[in-house]
Image 1 (tube, helix red, strand yellow):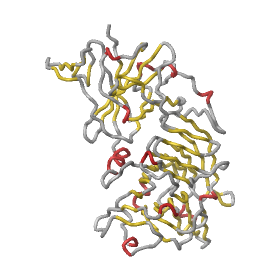
Image 2: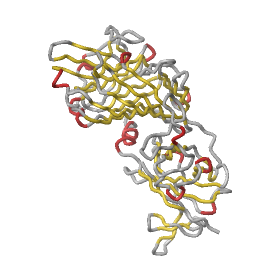
Image 3: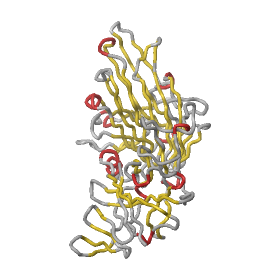
Amino acid sequence: MNGDRVGSGVRIALAGLISLGASGIAVAQDGSTGAAPTKTLHRTPDPVVTTGDVVSALVGKKIDQLGLFAAGPSGVAPIPFQVDEKTAAGAYVFPGGKEANPGDGNGVLDKQDEVVFMADDTGARIDAASWPAGATEGVEIAISDPVDGTSGWAYLFAFADKAPRSSADYVTYDPAAEKVTAKNYSMQYTPGKDNIFFSNITIPTSSGGSGVNFVDRLKLRTYIKTLLWLSLSFDEEEWDSKVAAYLDGPVRAIRMVKNSLSFMGIDVAPTVQVFATYYRDFHQAPAKINQTINFPAVAKEAWFKLSVDMNESAKGMKYYRPSPGAKDPWHVIDGTTTDDEKELDPKKPDWHLVTGKPGTFLWYVEMPKPLVPVTNLTYTDDAATEDSPENVPGSLGEVAFKFDLFPLEKGQYEMRLFYMYPQSWKPGDEKTWIQMIEKPLKTTGSALAKGA
């Protein structure tokens, strides 16, 4: 995702073809006129993450003197945004945590810093007459949807003093409670412990849920059978995890978590560094994987399963899996496995969705390319199957991604996990969320010339 442009006082280029006067009338190069562009963008869950070099006219400005605005029903007003500083080497500047590095920031907008806001908060294109009072310089950021060509605009302005800011805060992180509370969901890990797994997800009534936790936990299970026929298995509680640092802004929070799994001093799974990022409507976990083991040289079999197991509150919810040729895409979570559930296609679709009174949960994992052919999606609804450690015995509506580790040769890999919470979901709505991942919004930016 990146940025676009703004109207100027008398004229401002729009995509090199159109200029916009203070009257709000678009003037094309051929002299024809038309109404100023209104917002047509309708992608709701998407964040916009652009960089300082896209809004380069404001690079070097103090961050607390920058404000982001959009045109809404009540006029041009501040919208929630944040600037996450990064070092020249590309590392985030984290204010909190064991490895906090606030001294690496300088308090000004640099070209590598990230400007973050929600696409849903953008508005129509404005003219110079709409500049907020006190603004001295500005950049127009245009956002477009590559799927249908719809657009929206936001405006980053510099002020001589502290900039006006929106009071809205979409997400907060409480490090003591190890809990993230976003507008449309909350997630909690284990207070006082740097565990890799969460064990609580709730969706508030205001967002279409019941406010009740419906998950048992996130499970990470590893199995290795060595060439000497020694079998080793590991679970999520055996991972050595550390919440190294964090930041918390009004649009997103980020937890940098370092994870490793070893046996007798030897890494038995890839070491993983996760930048767990929490937005208003979803949680994203981009993971950098450092594969250090040549599995074919030491093992006959090696696999990893990543799953979300549900709890008793999930009973009555439904698992939705519209696979080609499936008799029925709906499967009630009741702790009993049906014949139809045993025959579910492990490849299509490549996401999981559970919905019901507690809310809707959509899970998508973007695998490293070597793992795509060897990844299967599984669904287990069997209250009699114990899979300890777990908080609630049994596998209730457990959704999983299971893959063979052999294709991962030594090297660096990246994968992304998306835990999403669509409101008022109905079949087909998941496409918008998948498009957010597979066909991200495009942004461009251009400096504004203030009119007289």
